[in-house]
Length: 151
Image 1 (spheres, one colour):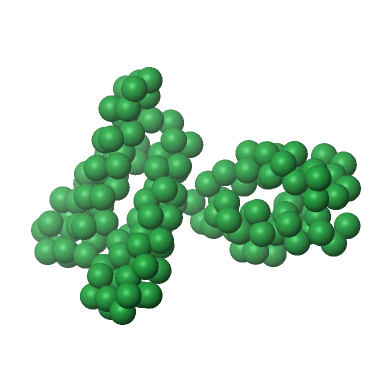
Image 2: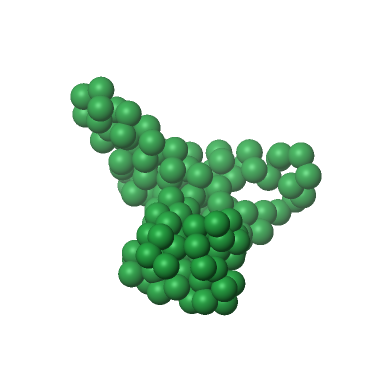
């Protein structure tokens, strides 16, 4: 079943259960998917990869907003963002741990023959392709920097 169909059925279930927190997150996902589908050149249906990118973008937005609200001592708005983030994350594939990311990046460094920080672009390109949807880009970047600076 496509993600859009799953979201629609989950929205109905959340409405029946009167679960407003979950409903907010699901409506955000539905809106973002609809927007992505209607973008110029997107075609009729989104690929699984495109759906994951949309979800990751939503999670990133929620994290950034939550940080800002926390800095401004707006606990009420911070809580809303965190709740929506948790709902959205349930539809993402399981994220790799930092250790798993490190192992994959070490393997990529070996394959690309990277020897210094000058090769970071080459390593990041390969890492982002291999870890797409499984790891946060910021974490991947940090791990790549750590490993390349240790060489």
